Image 1 (cartoon, rainbow, N blue to C red):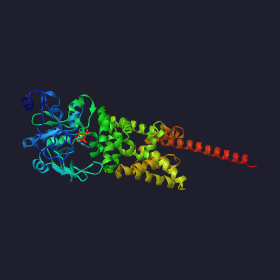
Image 2 (cartoon, rainbow, N blue to C red):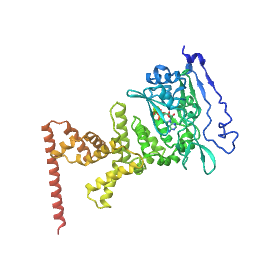
Image 3 (cartoon, helix red, strand yellow):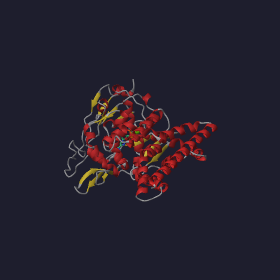
Image 4 (cartoon, helix red, strand yellow):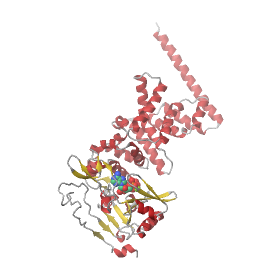
Length: 482
Ligand code: ATP
Ligand code: MG
């Protein structure tokens, strides 16, 4: 029998937290110091013995186990926590295994030769096994700062919106749990006895398929507005409902996302929209008024869910989901290019009509404008902005198919993405774009003879059209002239 099963005999034990004098009571006040109000919610941890849960060591990666045992044998506490525990309890394969311990980063480094310490603000240890990295964090604690207006103590250093701007203090496992976002993310699997400590009724939330924030929703979202995005991400990924209180305040607080550094949001957006649940996530983000905060240029598109631009967003995300779920590669550049294309078209028109620019200059300026505006919210790395521009530049170029132009376009490293985007545009707009997309579909796989014929057909067609047009123009002129 496993060690843990002998120590804790197959039942859920409720451990009532014994509060020390200096720690917060249930009302959030610290006894013995009535000038101090303490925000974090008190948690009542439950111990779930090995026999009462289904996480087995064979579900845990060898590298994670090595790290857990080395810490344990070194005399430290060692737990798996967060998404990996949650996903294992749901019978899903975790993306990665996160470890927490009471060892400090330096102590961790002392135990592992393959350890790299990262992060300046909050030091984390990366234990490196070739391409696999196990992240080990020291329990985080509350950083008691003073609210200068009320002279009361608050956790962490906060700005005027309640956002945590310093978050770098070590603490106990209880404090670590209080800082986590949702109840199912605050479950700790202990390598010492294979039991799980469930600090915030996470197991119940999992069973009831509900996403519940730990503590007061408004305070927690103000501390870190990204938690609103995470609630939506888990709702889509885990197919769960966001509990009423956790959900209700989100639309009202959505504007707080403007305070998040754009660099942090790029990764979040990729996880939200480009991980295989994009369409569902998009609808939820829209419903909770979060999407418009991330893509302010698309507000008018969002206000018209029957419009073709809205359908474009849905179609791009549907295609992305299909690719991700069939194991095909995707690039964030495609998503950004496709979703912001309507803004490029609109701004091009604006520069032509209001600025009097020639269409080519108007188009170039619109591309720079639209990207610049988007980067105020989401810092798209340069390795993606160049392909986004290329996909855009190629759209008008794909309409010019005569002579060498067609071959040059096909040689472009972004031709495939630009063509895929043309297919989507054609699906939405139909008409000439459908003909253009079909032409490219044939042309790129045709042998040289067929390619020549396809170009000749266009020449005839366009020549015919030009002649027809000229003929009509002459006729009209004749009719108009007295
Ligand atoms: P995923 O499966 O998508 O990785 P995850 O829950 O593991 O989901 P991570 O971003 O890897 O998400 O975070 C690991 C853990 O860290 C979370 O489970 C949660 O306990 C905690 N955490 C992450 N981000 C926050 C946050 N913004 N606020 C509070 N706790 C957070
Ligand atoms: Mg994770």
